[in-house]
Length: 94
Image (cartoon, rainbow, N blue to C red; front, side, top):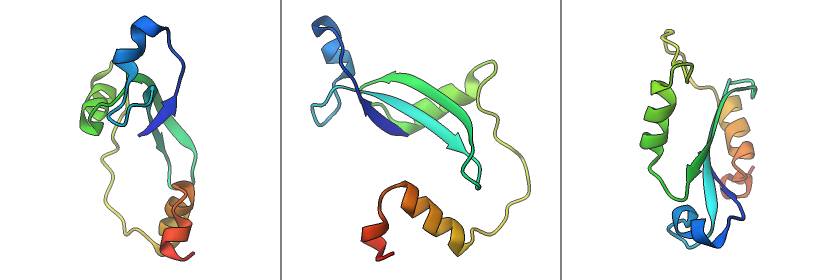
C-alpha cells in the first residue's frame, strides 16, 4: 500500500486527509516476485488500515485472488529487490 498525494475540491478535503495532515488516496499494488504488477486497487480516501483495503480487494467479484501454492523460501536476492523498490537501500547499507 502507498499514499498518493492528490488535489481535491475543498468540500472533499476532510475525507482525503491522512493522519499526518496530507491530502492523499491509498493504492494497493500486488506484484509477482519478478516485479510484474498483477493487481492494482486505487481510490481509498485518506488514511485507512491496510487490512481493510486487503479485505476489500479479496471480496470484490473479480478482485485479488490469493494463490494456494506451496510455500517457498524467500531468497536474499528478493530481499535486495524489495528493499530497493521501497527506497530503503541506504538503511540496509546496500
